[in-house]
Image 1 (cartoon, rainbow, N blue to C red):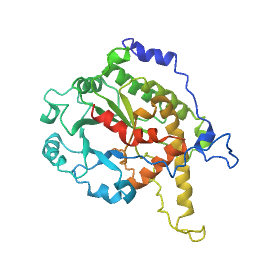
Image 2 (cartoon, helix red, strand yellow):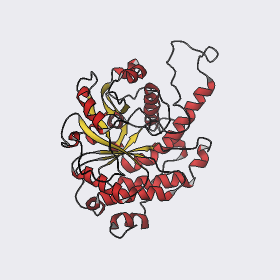
Image 3 (cartoon, rainbow, N blue to C red):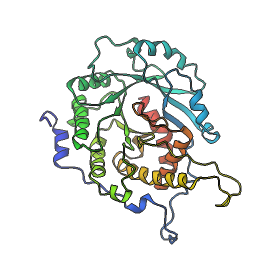
Image 4 (cartoon, rainbow, N blue to C red):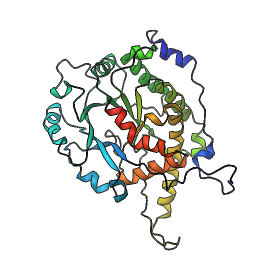
Length: 357
């Protein structure tokens, strides 16, 4: 680490002492729990009052496919979306932006493609001339390597008042240095905040790290003490020290689609149940693993800087249904004992803060 960024260097020499959640926090409560140790809120009763889906990929601005996935319960809660125009060129973005205002579903912000590798733009497109326009324009990019050009591009965007969503596409699972490269990028793009000075004008939203890519074949008991998980804990703490950094909570790249949540029936016995036992077990395993990753992120960022979104990373082949991920995400937070205020922040309020300020 360069001596130009003493704030980050100091964190590595004296890492933050992290509180940890016990393994019992990631499984169901014991049947022996009594009045002395009250149960956490019932996951079936904890729902956000409103929902902003902060990651809906629809380059054409047509939300029909997304609407088809959203079930009746969620439809009544949707208060807006953050629309991703992933894959479009600058000229294509310019041509489709007028269509956004015609959407029947309120669009809080639009994620427009932006390259870190190209450095600070010398002739930016017209839609990057005003960071206060509505719907808000948020720059969407991927991070693959730390270069001077990447730091310059990120600093340019933040100085102009734009928020930037960074899809982390480096190998965080097997290489601790990739975490350090991400931290170094932020330190170079926000030198004043790295040294305890003024806050950047724009926000940064990190994507594809909650949950991060993972190997489902690694048992959860082993994951708890695995170097990969320990690195995740410590680097979440380091990244959280930037007050303008948020984390997006989207379907993970785990090599299989998001497990479905079966619709409830009026009367149903185990014999008559249409639920595939394998699918039910798969969902339970996913929830346990998801909660393992929520824990350190929650301890580092708190409820105020985690943002819900339903589309997986656009840079992966991950498949997920919007309604299935909503239920899995909501239940995971609820089973960790999250109160109503926290649920409302993650699924609604934090998106408004991150993408409109």
